[in-house]
Every structure is written in C-alpha cells, then in structure tokens.
Image 1: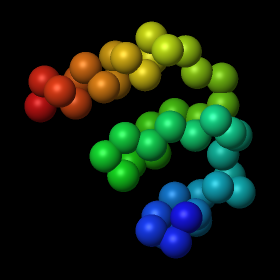
Image 2: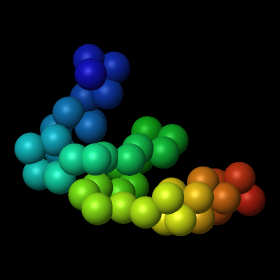
Image 3: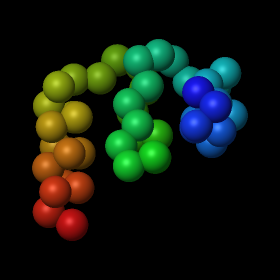
Image 4: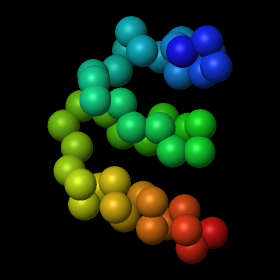
Length: 46
C-alpha cells in the first residue's frame, strides 16, 4: 500500500471491496460485475 498513499487515506471511510481504476477509487461495498464492466468500458472508450 506504500505505492498508493491516496488510497490509504480513504480506507477507513469505505466499505471493502474497494475498486480502483487508473489510480482513482471508483466503487466500494456491494458492487456488481456489470458496474465494473461498464466503468472499464468507459475507460477504454476515452
């Protein structure tokens, strides 16, 4: 986690599972594979 200081800062405020894409926290807690798939698809389009 030393490589991710920004993520370490928020760990006490989120529910695990924490999904981070391109160094940005995107989802936490109860998440579906569809949500992750949509987010990754959006990143690929950029």
